[in-house]
Image (cartoon, rainbow, N blue to C red; front, side, top):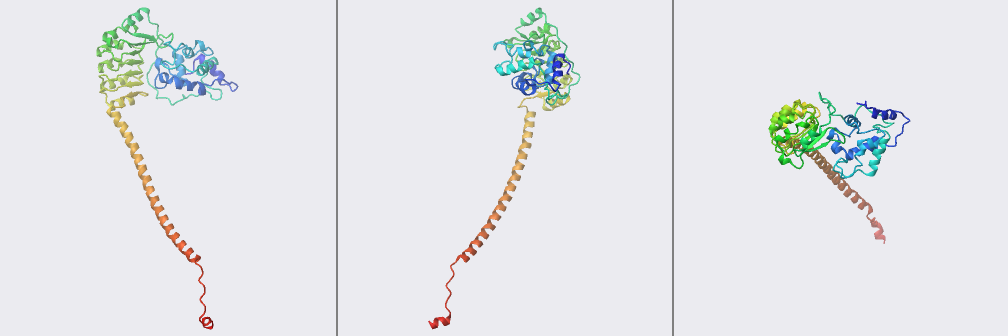
Length: 379
């Protein structure tokens, strides 16, 4: 993992005891990323194949995006440059949120200017990531660097009403969506995306009029890693066309016609990390079997799926039973304590009465001694 020359020029400096950095990644930079970037680029979600939740994730991001972090040159580093774009610029980050504070932006700029080091002098880089790593996936190839799309292909796809944007500045990887024309998107529209088959890595077809007839066209988008098909008419037939996609990591099938047959087919997609199955015919047992089969995969059936409800209620039942047992034990102990206190109180009251009686006897005025019988006569 640690083979990037840009990064390790600074890592070498960090390894010496005499090095002292003004900005510390762990205590100053990582918290900024966690607070403002993790929603889209964190452990659970990696839009644009970029995650910023750990040093290892950032290193991988530098491999995938060569201009992400240019040591000692913030202005050429996308990580900084996109923070200072005008607020209305679509490329500004954080996307859809308020800009970072001036203090945070300056910290990131200074950190990169100092070398963008991911470790500190007194805490050298460890082999393990900052958080517990997910189980390693098997047979997941690294996607090759993509060639730029031709202007003709871009125009052909945009003519369908598609919004086509690069994942980041200068990227050949494209995201395609239909934010203003979903009702007009059909299987023929998907077929028209094929000219950009090699460059599309994220595709949003949610809420469109597509059916299983689009599957053969989708199959040609071999570099897809994110695919939204929710609220469409697709089913098991479409999923059968997706199983050979080597990089597919995110698949949303919410409110589609898929069944357990799709889950069985998806066992061959080793790269899959997130699968959404809300309001489908997929069963709880099949979902759990798929999760068990694919390391690191999270299958979301929705909070109201009967199997999920059963799991939640079973967990709650165990918790409430434990609380009830603890309360019963506490009540029994309280009863015993009360009985003991009552017995103690009675014994104390009895003894109190005895003490008071004895004190009363002792405190009575002494009776005057009666005169002897002989004395009375003499008087």
